[in-house]
Length: 89
Image (cartoon, rainbow, N blue to C red; front, side, top):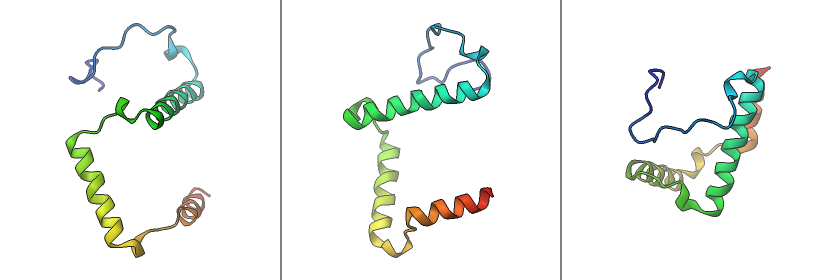
């Protein structure tokens, strides 16, 4: 949200330990990646720390059912990577 207000479901963040806004953008991106990785690692060990909404769960179930019904539509990860790298070249 750009309005300065926090989303209604998120409590306001306390004052950060340091002013990350003074970091160069590449360092802020690295910080975001590190934070995201730490969340993913904890969620892998304790999935309950990142609960799904009913809508998210329903969408995951729908996608899983679609993938199971039509496995021939799947694209191998290696092919996805190849396509992405060609696009970026």
